Length: 246
Length: 394
Image (cartoon, rainbow over all chains, first blue to last red; front, side):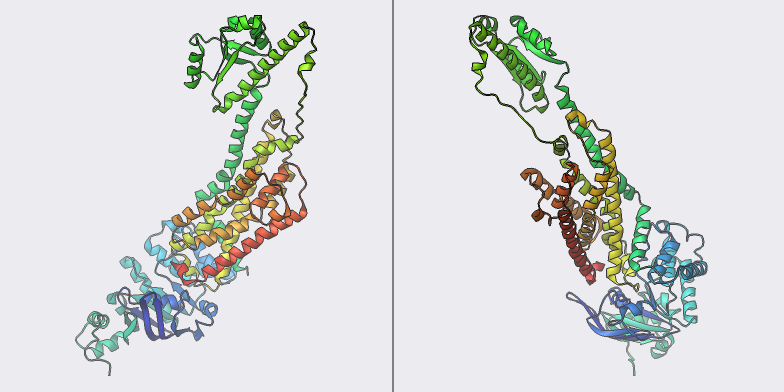
């Protein structure tokens, strides 16, 4: 479970996050939705412990990020905005490197790499250098790398960016499988259609604040006659949808 | 389970070993010094050795007026060269100024008359002092002319019944006490600089690639989400850089060893005592420079946003170790304990002592290594501090 309480983050004059709170439950896919610049990436960067918040706190699996960042890093995996693979290493070597830095045994690393390469259908490319990969292959290897230590929590920053339709479907199937395994999945996106069929819970943020939360079906009930897309657009344009939360 | 520092440095070594420019920085870069040295030596040897006993052809004007002088010159392997275009002193000066002739010896119109009546007879050497390579030949001819003049003068005094030694109240003897290895030091002045250059440039690519390059490639952010302290990541990267630097230093030293074996140092009356034992000693004297360079480059790279930006700054940094070496060359300082705390100057003085085949003072070696390593630790600590900042993600 990922718990976020009144997170705030200032970059110079820009208030990137202004009191963001939400909970992402285990066994669910939570979508962090918002337009560009809303604070999604800042939020995920704080949750992945590369940035520290100025205000508020966050816990992953009950571990406080401010006090136990290293412990938290053992139980989450991150797919950042850019895959960030090492171009001179093969896909498998990229995965193995992260396994070693997670302190896994060589045997365990080999097992996990085999398993992930098979599940993500990377067998044909895992032995090639990453510099020749397509965007889809890069994302898959980066995902395998993020999962090498079998984390309970998985965070993905706009994972479908630049993927073609087949790769996107493949990724969605994968995220559903992670959910079925009882993991806590948090992903960000700026396109409602991409996530509405996938997520169990939506957290819509705009200008550093949470403007609306709920599952897609809850939101559809609460705002009858509107598509999720319309609800999203209203929620981020400042005007909260008319029949507000009771 | 291996330490993260080892894991990171092994990965960086594997990663960079697959790039072509790594091969360049490890093989070609470190051999620039030895290659330049060979060229410099060959030029010097051909200039200074040729003067001794080889035949020398010199354009001369008015040889018919001084047959005895010309015969004397011939006996000393200096032969007149046909120069029909030169008919006067002015022609000769023009020819030398225009570069058609390096050097002309002109015998005065009145030479025969003056010589016959025991008045000073004039000969003129026409040359361009700014042309270094002709000066050796000019000096050789001047020496022969002076010897001829003294011989004739002595004969005239004897003919008048005067002891010619009366004319020589002083005898000036030169006694050069520099050892033959010591004379080689002038030429070996470039030696430490190229060793320092090889060491630093050998690790430059890796130092930049593992810091600024990693940030530019966006692989830094996921790396920082791993359960490894940032200090360990950075130390691993610096360790890999140090391995490359020491590799480049070793390649350069082997290059010099090979070159010294095959150069005609004896022709310059120099001997080189630079053998395998000196090379190993030089390796250990220069070893502390690698961590210092790695820490400094990592520190600089952590301020910069891109590979290119870091490369620009660090290329300037490669000049820094030359300043103490230049200072030492100009002021001719001797190794002393109070200079041993200055990195690059201390290594220069110690390596120079090695080349001169002087024994190394263990106290000085320890001071040099201790101080350089202390600077390395300080800069490394600063680099780690900078890596804790959020701005490191760029």
